[in-house]
Length: 245
Image 1 (cartoon, rainbow, N blue to C red):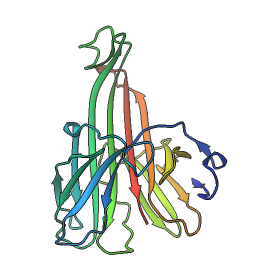
Image 2 (image 1 turned 30 degrees about the vertical axis):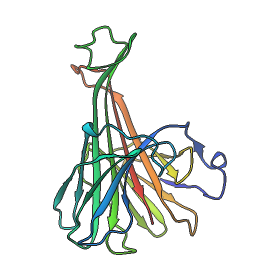
Image 3 (image 1 turned 30 degrees about the horizontal axis):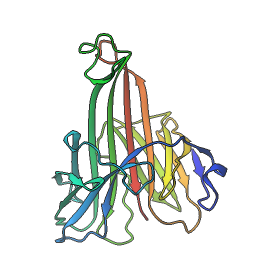
C-alpha cells in the first residue's frame, strides 16, 4: 500500500485529517557520540514534537538496545512537561529506544473512571485494558539510516527509509498485523493524517514530498474485544514511531 502527502498543502487538502488527539512518543535529543551522555525524552500531546504533558513515570518501562544487542535499562523521570532519561553510549552505530506504558485495566462507571475491571467494578458501564508503546532510532554515524528491526513489543511500528519513501511495518507480538490504521503527524501540525491501513503483510509505504526533512511521528492503534473470560471488555493498544532524517 502507498500513501503520499504534500507537506506544502494544508492538511485539510491532503488525505483524511484525524480529529484532534493526544499522542505519546519517544525521541532522542541532539547528536549521539560514544563516550558522551545521551538524552531521551518521552513526550505527550497533540503538537509533536512539543510535549504538553508528562505521562505517569510509574507506569513506564524504558530501554535502549545498543548496536551489539545489549539491552540498557533507562529510568525516566519528570523533566518539565516531559519525561527524560540519560545514559552513556559505548558503541558506534544505530541505537533503538523504546518504552512501554502499561496503563492497566480501568472501568468507566456512573461515578467516573475507576481502576480495575468488572470484578472490582461489577456495575461498570465498560472496562478496558490499555497499553502504549513507542520506538525511536538514533545513529552515532551521521546520515546512516537504520533498518526496520523489531524489538518484540506487544504492538510495534518499524520503518526503513528506502528510495525516497518510508516502508512501514506494523507488528503484533512480532507478527505482521493486517488492517492496522496508520497515521502521520508532521512536526508542528495539530492534526494527524490517516495514511491508510496495512495489508496482509502488515506493511504500508509512505512517500514524503521531495526534499522534505524533519521530524515525523507515525502512529498505529489496535482496538478489539477482549478474549472470553477476561475481566474487561476491550483491549486498546497504541504505538508510535518518531523519525528524523
